[in-house]
Amino acid sequence: MTHFLVSDENENGYRLEDILTAVRGDVVKRCEKIVDDHREEAHHVLDNNIRVLSLLSEAIRLAEDSTFVLDKSFGPSSSSEGGEPRIGRP
Image 1 (cartoon, rainbow, N blue to C red):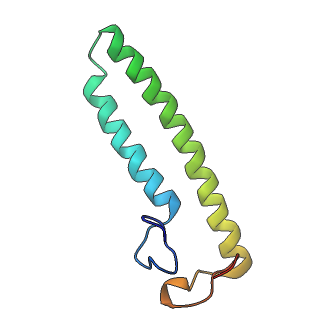
Image 2: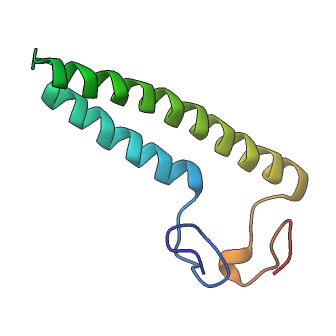
Image 3: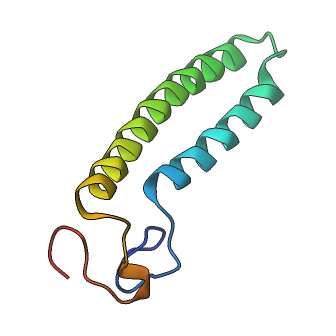
């Protein structure tokens, strides 16, 4: 069973790109709080967070691309209404 993502057991789950977008927003909010802190540690953490933001953005694009491919090939998902998964096994 998945904890966060849509699955047969978790019909109220989220799409991967939606979770990653929410996490990215949280990281941006954290960055806003430390951007004016000029201590070395704050700069280090900010640099790490900026790198994480870049990786999250790349992951969001990949997840959106997968959704696009599935939608284009098989139409919208109906698994939340009890339909079969578009790919893979139930």
